[in-house]
Length: 157
Image 1 (cartoon, helix red, strand yellow):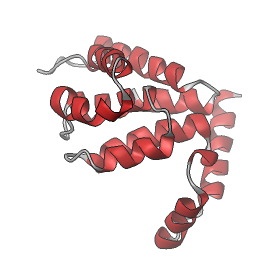
Image 2 (image 1 turned 120 degrees about the vertical axis):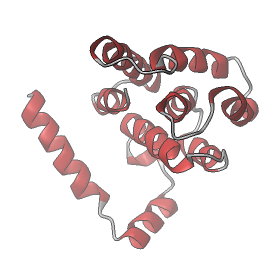
Image 3 (image 1 turned 45 degrees about the vertical axis):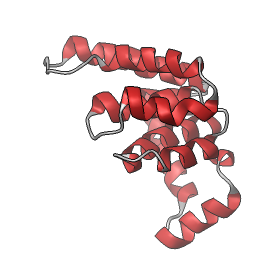
Image 4 (image 1 turned 60 degrees about the vertical axis):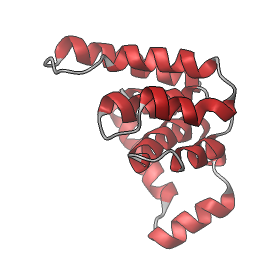
């Protein structure tokens, strides 16, 4: 689901369409995979997006914590990340909200940030924060992005 959302975003999808791709991939995974006890990720994403869309953004954090969950279980962390990405009015603000949720916030932020970044590009993130990320982690984002895009083009034409 996450890979499908990011791939769709890189391909030019809106955040809503990227999350729709995630739902479709989760449904495909349910058909092809092995059954495990737990709720349908696709159904939970669909429900969570609809629920959050009906709320004021100030209520998103409480709704995620109370109704979706933020544990390491994919039925919670993946659903929370994708639902928040789908309704995000502001990518950076959304990641700041995720950081304060509690639970598996690093995973939720990584997923949500990957989807929002794939849709909006590096311009989604404040330049000062990108500079800090690069400096603290000795990270060169642009060459990594260029290499990943070249790999994508090689496999998808």
